[in-house]
Length: 394
Image 1 (cartoon, rainbow, N blue to C red):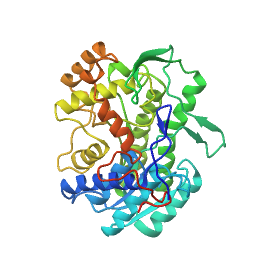
Image 2 (cartoon, helix red, strand yellow):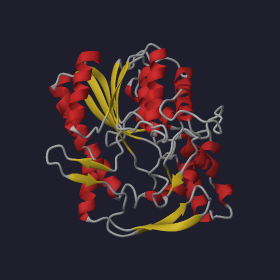
Image 3 (tube, helix red, strand yellow):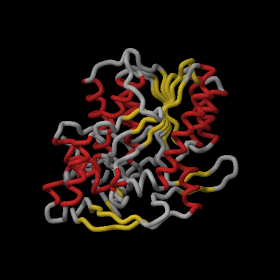
Image 4 (cartoon, one colour):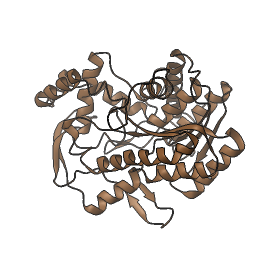
């Protein structure tokens, strides 16, 4: 037993709380249940990257709204008697327990989703347990990938292309605003980021599942992307991550052709900006999110991962009248973020905000709370002074 507190280094949280992670999973389930059932939703779902953020939320909506049997793929570390597990490990355990209590079939594969071995294990699990899949959600955000064919290691970077990018950023712990700079990526770094964060692995997954007969007629697969505002274009959409996301979007077109024989379709969902481990350290992005949260909450428009993924399934993928796609064929769940009035407030606040007047323009409290809750801290009803067993969630 040990007392687990948030241990943060360079805006990265190194610990997670088992009871807090379980509480935030239950909170997401309560929200989905409050929205009612999704009778036309999927029945057999694979989520690749299922332990955190959008992937976890997509799995929760699939199970607790549509009643789907789910298979989740994640690469997480269990706890030890003197060390907490990763937040994703606790989240997965909490989901599994809640699904079992609700009579919802759920299976997990813990391993590197980029490897052939994990793909083969998932295919075996689908054949033996669920039957052909109706929906495959691809939600991988990884720092590196080993190419299964060559064994070469690729590492992703978050950098601008062509020239350095300097922008105001916020230290969410102290509230200090200072300029930070990201140097431009090399051609090798661009190529590496595309290999890790682009569409190649998504394509490998879909082709493997299709060849194994593990996709049902009409199966849909969706991967997640982001575009963002002009303020962050240089570091995001026009940078290395943007190149990778463009590759992901091109992959969707190829996969739709591949899936034509089973009347399937591949789609990309452009989601809104949210607090993640990466967003806390990208120049400009942390401040943008704090300003965005203030603007969206003032209008009653703010959404977290669970709200976005609930909309994805209810309004886009399985609605009687699905929301339309943009001219590039993408689902746009960033519609509320990109509303002209929201962006106008963010741009005006960006020009005025300083360390001294930060709370006037930015939702620093909301940023901090969301960051900590990703790791199970700050959840209501949890006594964080009490020792817990880090090897389990209850």
